Length: 323
Image (cartoon, rainbow, N blue to C red; front, top):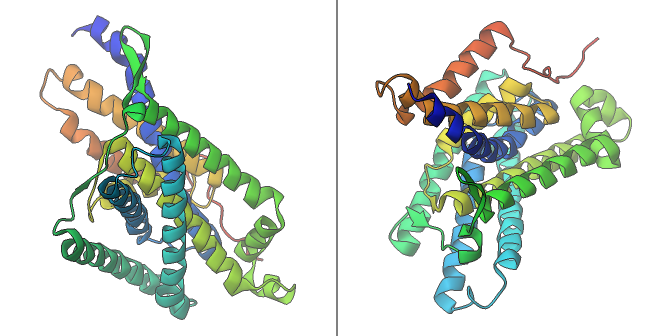
Protein backbone atom coordinates (compact mmCIF):
# COMPACT_ATOMS: atom_id res chain seq x y z
CA UNK A 1 0.00 0.00 0.00
CA UNK A 2 1.37 3.42 -1.02
CA UNK A 3 1.12 5.38 2.23
CA UNK A 4 2.89 8.37 0.73
CA UNK A 5 0.17 8.64 -1.91
CA UNK A 6 -2.55 8.32 0.72
CA UNK A 7 -1.06 11.16 2.73
CA UNK A 8 -0.33 13.28 -0.35
CA UNK A 9 -3.94 13.33 -1.57
CA UNK A 10 -5.42 13.74 1.92
CA UNK A 11 -5.74 17.58 1.87
CA UNK A 12 -7.34 17.52 -1.60
CA UNK A 13 -9.81 14.84 -0.51
CA UNK A 14 -10.77 16.92 2.53
CA UNK A 15 -11.34 19.97 0.34
CA UNK A 16 -13.48 18.04 -2.15
CA UNK A 17 -15.44 16.51 0.72
CA UNK A 18 -16.16 19.93 2.24
CA UNK A 19 -17.53 21.26 -1.05
CA UNK A 20 -19.77 18.20 -1.43
CA UNK A 21 -20.77 18.39 2.23
CA UNK A 22 -21.90 22.01 2.01
CA UNK A 23 -24.00 21.07 -1.02
CA UNK A 24 -25.71 18.29 0.95
CA UNK A 25 -26.18 20.63 3.91
CA UNK A 26 -27.92 23.24 1.78
CA UNK A 27 -30.34 20.66 0.37
CA UNK A 28 -30.87 19.13 3.82
CA UNK A 29 -32.20 22.46 5.13
CA UNK A 30 -35.40 21.96 3.16
CA UNK A 31 -36.01 18.60 4.80
CA UNK A 32 -35.17 19.84 8.27
CA UNK A 33 -37.29 23.03 8.03
CA UNK A 34 -40.44 21.17 7.00
CA UNK A 35 -39.91 18.33 9.46
CA UNK A 36 -39.31 20.75 12.29
CA UNK A 37 -42.75 22.33 11.76
CA UNK A 38 -44.95 19.52 10.42
CA UNK A 39 -42.97 16.36 11.26
CA UNK A 40 -43.35 15.53 7.55
CA UNK A 41 -40.60 14.07 5.35
CA UNK A 42 -41.02 16.10 2.17
CA UNK A 43 -39.52 13.70 -0.37
CA UNK A 44 -40.59 16.08 -3.15
CA UNK A 45 -37.85 18.45 -1.93
CA UNK A 46 -35.28 16.65 -4.09
CA UNK A 47 -37.31 17.60 -7.18
CA UNK A 48 -37.71 21.19 -5.96
CA UNK A 49 -33.90 21.24 -5.80
CA UNK A 50 -33.82 19.88 -9.37
CA UNK A 51 -36.24 22.57 -10.61
CA UNK A 52 -33.93 25.24 -9.21
CA UNK A 53 -31.11 23.74 -11.25
CA UNK A 54 -33.23 23.87 -14.42
CA UNK A 55 -34.18 27.51 -13.76
CA UNK A 56 -30.49 28.37 -13.66
CA UNK A 57 -29.55 26.49 -16.83
CA UNK A 58 -32.52 27.85 -18.79
CA UNK A 59 -31.60 31.45 -17.92
CA UNK A 60 -27.96 30.85 -18.85
CA UNK A 61 -28.81 29.12 -22.14
CA UNK A 62 -31.22 31.93 -23.04
CA UNK A 63 -28.56 34.55 -22.25
CA UNK A 64 -26.04 32.57 -24.29
CA UNK A 65 -28.39 32.41 -27.29
CA UNK A 66 -29.02 36.17 -27.17
CA UNK A 67 -25.36 37.04 -26.67
CA UNK A 68 -25.91 38.53 -23.20
CA UNK A 69 -23.84 35.93 -21.40
CA UNK A 70 -20.56 37.66 -22.27
CA UNK A 71 -21.95 41.13 -21.60
CA UNK A 72 -22.40 40.97 -17.84
CA UNK A 73 -20.00 40.14 -15.04
CA UNK A 74 -20.21 36.37 -14.35
CA UNK A 75 -20.56 36.93 -10.61
CA UNK A 76 -23.55 39.24 -11.21
CA UNK A 77 -25.09 36.57 -13.46
CA UNK A 78 -24.49 33.92 -10.80
CA UNK A 79 -26.20 35.99 -8.11
CA UNK A 80 -29.12 36.61 -10.47
CA UNK A 81 -29.67 32.94 -11.35
CA UNK A 82 -29.35 31.91 -7.69
CA UNK A 83 -32.04 34.44 -6.74
CA UNK A 84 -34.28 33.29 -9.60
CA UNK A 85 -33.76 29.64 -8.69
CA UNK A 86 -34.64 30.45 -5.08
CA UNK A 87 -37.77 32.37 -6.13
CA UNK A 88 -39.14 29.70 -8.48
CA UNK A 89 -38.33 26.77 -6.19
CA UNK A 90 -39.71 28.62 -3.16
CA UNK A 91 -43.01 29.36 -4.90
CA UNK A 92 -43.18 25.79 -6.18
CA UNK A 93 -42.71 24.46 -2.65
CA UNK A 94 -45.59 26.66 -1.44
CA UNK A 95 -47.82 25.36 -4.25
CA UNK A 96 -46.91 21.77 -3.39
CA UNK A 97 -47.75 22.38 0.28
CA UNK A 98 -51.07 23.99 -0.60
CA UNK A 99 -52.16 21.34 -3.12
CA UNK A 100 -50.64 18.08 -1.90
CA UNK A 101 -50.01 18.44 1.86
CA UNK A 102 -52.46 20.89 3.42
CA UNK A 103 -55.59 18.85 2.55
CA UNK A 104 -53.94 15.85 4.26
CA UNK A 105 -52.88 17.68 7.40
CA UNK A 106 -53.95 15.66 10.42
CA UNK A 107 -54.14 12.42 8.43
CA UNK A 108 -52.00 9.41 9.43
CA UNK A 109 -48.34 10.07 8.62
CA UNK A 110 -48.17 7.44 5.88
CA UNK A 111 -50.72 9.29 3.72
CA UNK A 112 -48.83 12.61 3.26
CA UNK A 113 -45.64 10.58 2.82
CA UNK A 114 -47.20 8.77 -0.13
CA UNK A 115 -48.43 12.11 -1.44
CA UNK A 116 -44.87 13.48 -1.24
CA UNK A 117 -43.53 10.56 -3.25
CA UNK A 118 -46.29 11.08 -5.83
CA UNK A 119 -45.43 14.78 -6.14
CA UNK A 120 -41.79 13.81 -6.61
CA UNK A 121 -42.56 11.60 -9.62
CA UNK A 122 -45.00 14.18 -10.99
CA UNK A 123 -42.38 16.95 -10.96
CA UNK A 124 -39.79 14.68 -12.58
CA UNK A 125 -42.10 13.85 -15.47
CA UNK A 126 -43.40 17.42 -15.76
CA UNK A 127 -39.88 18.81 -16.18
CA UNK A 128 -38.99 16.02 -18.60
CA UNK A 129 -42.09 16.77 -20.69
CA UNK A 130 -41.53 20.51 -20.63
CA UNK A 131 -37.86 20.30 -21.61
CA UNK A 132 -38.59 17.73 -24.33
CA UNK A 133 -41.16 20.06 -25.90
CA UNK A 134 -39.01 23.17 -25.44
CA UNK A 135 -35.52 21.92 -26.31
CA UNK A 136 -36.08 18.35 -27.49
CA UNK A 137 -33.66 17.32 -24.75
CA UNK A 138 -33.74 17.14 -20.98
CA UNK A 139 -30.08 16.41 -20.24
CA UNK A 140 -28.73 19.96 -20.27
CA UNK A 141 -25.24 21.36 -19.77
CA UNK A 142 -24.54 24.56 -17.88
CA UNK A 143 -22.60 27.14 -19.91
CA UNK A 144 -19.22 27.53 -18.27
CA UNK A 145 -17.48 30.69 -17.14
CA UNK A 146 -13.71 30.83 -17.47
CA UNK A 147 -13.51 32.88 -14.27
CA UNK A 148 -15.25 30.11 -12.29
CA UNK A 149 -13.05 27.34 -13.69
CA UNK A 150 -9.80 29.04 -12.68
CA UNK A 151 -7.77 26.75 -10.43
CA UNK A 152 -6.17 28.10 -7.28
CA UNK A 153 -3.10 26.10 -6.27
CA UNK A 154 -2.15 26.07 -2.60
CA UNK A 155 0.50 23.34 -2.84
CA UNK A 156 1.73 20.83 -5.38
CA UNK A 157 -1.05 18.36 -4.51
CA UNK A 158 -3.74 20.82 -3.38
CA UNK A 159 -5.82 23.00 -5.66
CA UNK A 160 -9.42 24.00 -6.04
CA UNK A 161 -11.56 25.95 -8.48
CA UNK A 162 -13.15 29.33 -7.93
CA UNK A 163 -16.60 27.78 -8.25
CA UNK A 164 -15.80 25.45 -5.33
CA UNK A 165 -15.07 28.52 -3.21
CA UNK A 166 -18.35 30.04 -4.40
CA UNK A 167 -20.27 26.92 -3.32
CA UNK A 168 -18.71 26.98 0.17
CA UNK A 169 -19.14 30.74 0.71
CA UNK A 170 -22.72 30.81 -0.62
CA UNK A 171 -23.69 27.77 1.46
CA UNK A 172 -22.20 29.23 4.65
CA UNK A 173 -23.89 32.59 4.04
CA UNK A 174 -27.31 30.98 3.54
CA UNK A 175 -26.90 28.59 6.46
CA UNK A 176 -26.00 31.39 8.89
CA UNK A 177 -28.73 33.66 7.46
CA UNK A 178 -31.30 30.94 8.00
CA UNK A 179 -30.09 30.25 11.53
CA UNK A 180 -30.34 33.98 12.29
CA UNK A 181 -33.84 34.18 10.81
CA UNK A 182 -35.12 31.23 12.84
CA UNK A 183 -33.51 32.20 16.16
CA UNK A 184 -33.41 36.02 16.14
CA UNK A 185 -36.43 37.34 14.19
CA UNK A 186 -40.16 37.67 14.78
CA UNK A 187 -40.85 35.30 11.88
CA UNK A 188 -38.45 32.78 13.36
CA UNK A 189 -40.21 33.02 16.70
CA UNK A 190 -43.53 32.32 14.94
CA UNK A 191 -42.03 29.34 13.11
CA UNK A 192 -40.75 27.92 16.39
CA UNK A 193 -44.12 28.53 18.04
CA UNK A 194 -45.96 26.66 15.29
CA UNK A 195 -43.42 23.84 15.50
CA UNK A 196 -43.95 23.65 19.27
CA UNK A 197 -47.75 23.69 19.40
CA UNK A 198 -49.98 24.65 16.47
CA UNK A 199 -53.29 25.07 18.40
CA UNK A 200 -51.69 27.25 21.08
CA UNK A 201 -49.82 29.32 18.48
CA UNK A 202 -53.11 29.89 16.67
CA UNK A 203 -54.78 31.03 19.89
CA UNK A 204 -51.92 33.49 20.43
CA UNK A 205 -52.66 35.15 17.08
CA UNK A 206 -50.21 33.31 14.84
CA UNK A 207 -51.56 32.49 11.38
CA UNK A 208 -50.53 28.83 11.28
CA UNK A 209 -51.25 28.26 7.58
CA UNK A 210 -49.26 31.35 6.63
CA UNK A 211 -46.29 30.32 8.75
CA UNK A 212 -46.31 26.80 7.31
CA UNK A 213 -46.40 28.24 3.79
CA UNK A 214 -43.49 30.55 4.63
CA UNK A 215 -41.58 27.57 6.02
CA UNK A 216 -42.05 25.73 2.74
CA UNK A 217 -41.08 28.91 0.87
CA UNK A 218 -37.81 29.22 2.81
CA UNK A 219 -36.98 25.51 2.54
CA UNK A 220 -37.79 25.49 -1.17
CA UNK A 221 -35.66 28.59 -1.73
CA UNK A 222 -32.69 26.88 -0.07
CA UNK A 223 -33.25 23.88 -2.34
CA UNK A 224 -33.41 26.13 -5.42
CA UNK A 225 -30.14 27.82 -4.49
CA UNK A 226 -28.55 24.40 -4.02
CA UNK A 227 -29.83 23.32 -7.45
CA UNK A 228 -28.18 26.29 -9.17
CA UNK A 229 -24.92 25.81 -7.26
CA UNK A 230 -24.99 22.09 -8.09
CA UNK A 231 -25.36 22.87 -11.80
CA UNK A 232 -22.55 25.43 -11.69
CA UNK A 233 -20.27 23.03 -9.81
CA UNK A 234 -20.97 19.84 -11.80
CA UNK A 235 -22.06 21.41 -15.14
CA UNK A 236 -25.02 19.12 -15.92
CA UNK A 237 -28.65 18.83 -14.91
CA UNK A 238 -31.49 16.44 -15.78
CA UNK A 239 -34.95 15.61 -14.36
CA UNK A 240 -33.49 12.78 -12.28
CA UNK A 241 -30.61 14.82 -10.85
CA UNK A 242 -32.40 15.45 -7.57
CA UNK A 243 -32.96 11.84 -6.56
CA UNK A 244 -29.55 10.71 -5.32
CA UNK A 245 -28.44 14.08 -3.85
CA UNK A 246 -31.89 14.37 -2.26
CA UNK A 247 -31.64 10.97 -0.58
CA UNK A 248 -28.13 11.79 0.61
CA UNK A 249 -29.25 15.19 1.91
CA UNK A 250 -32.05 13.44 3.78
CA UNK A 251 -29.40 11.12 5.21
CA UNK A 252 -27.40 14.20 6.23
CA UNK A 253 -30.48 15.68 7.93
CA UNK A 254 -31.05 12.46 9.88
CA UNK A 255 -27.34 12.18 10.67
CA UNK A 256 -27.20 15.68 12.15
CA UNK A 257 -30.62 15.47 13.82
CA UNK A 258 -33.63 16.14 11.62
CA UNK A 259 -35.37 19.38 12.47
CA UNK A 260 -32.05 20.79 13.71
CA UNK A 261 -30.59 23.50 11.43
CA UNK A 262 -26.98 23.30 12.72
CA UNK A 263 -27.41 19.53 12.60
CA UNK A 264 -28.15 19.73 8.86
CA UNK A 265 -24.83 21.50 8.32
CA UNK A 266 -22.89 19.06 10.50
CA UNK A 267 -24.57 16.04 8.92
CA UNK A 268 -23.91 17.34 5.41
CA UNK A 269 -20.23 17.97 6.11
CA UNK A 270 -19.73 14.56 7.75
CA UNK A 271 -21.47 12.77 4.90
CA UNK A 272 -19.59 14.75 2.23
CA UNK A 273 -16.23 14.00 3.84
CA UNK A 274 -17.00 10.29 4.24
CA UNK A 275 -18.12 10.05 0.63
CA UNK A 276 -15.02 11.86 -0.62
CA UNK A 277 -12.76 9.56 1.43
CA UNK A 278 -14.59 6.51 0.09
CA UNK A 279 -14.30 7.71 -3.51
CA UNK A 280 -10.58 8.45 -3.20
CA UNK A 281 -9.29 5.78 -0.81
CA UNK A 282 -11.49 2.74 -1.34
CA UNK A 283 -9.62 1.53 -4.40
CA UNK A 284 -6.22 2.18 -2.80
CA UNK A 285 -7.09 0.46 0.47
CA UNK A 286 -8.63 -2.62 -1.20
CA UNK A 287 -6.04 -3.05 -3.93
CA UNK A 288 -8.58 -2.18 -6.62
CA UNK A 289 -11.21 -4.67 -5.46
CA UNK A 290 -13.62 -1.81 -4.74
CA UNK A 291 -13.68 1.48 -6.60
CA UNK A 292 -15.28 4.91 -6.34
CA UNK A 293 -18.56 3.50 -7.66
CA UNK A 294 -19.16 2.00 -4.20
CA UNK A 295 -19.10 5.39 -2.44
CA UNK A 296 -22.92 5.63 -2.46
CA UNK A 297 -23.07 2.55 -0.26
CA UNK A 298 -21.52 4.61 2.53
CA UNK A 299 -24.36 7.15 2.53
CA UNK A 300 -27.05 4.53 2.90
CA UNK A 301 -25.03 2.42 5.34
CA UNK A 302 -24.65 5.50 7.53
CA UNK A 303 -28.42 6.06 7.42
CA UNK A 304 -29.06 2.49 8.57
CA UNK A 305 -26.47 2.68 11.37
CA UNK A 306 -27.76 6.05 12.62
CA UNK A 307 -31.37 4.85 12.62
CA UNK A 308 -30.37 1.77 14.63
CA UNK A 309 -27.96 3.23 17.17
CA UNK A 310 -28.73 6.96 17.35
CA UNK A 311 -32.07 7.73 15.70
CA UNK A 312 -32.06 11.29 17.10
CA UNK A 313 -28.90 12.18 15.17
CA UNK A 314 -25.57 13.66 16.23
CA UNK A 315 -26.97 16.93 17.58
CA UNK A 316 -30.41 15.65 18.53
CA UNK A 317 -33.73 15.66 16.73
CA UNK A 318 -35.89 18.77 17.14
CA UNK A 319 -39.58 17.94 17.39
CA UNK A 320 -42.62 19.34 19.16
CA UNK A 321 -42.77 18.81 22.88
CA UNK A 322 -46.15 17.52 24.01
CA UNK A 323 -47.35 17.61 27.56
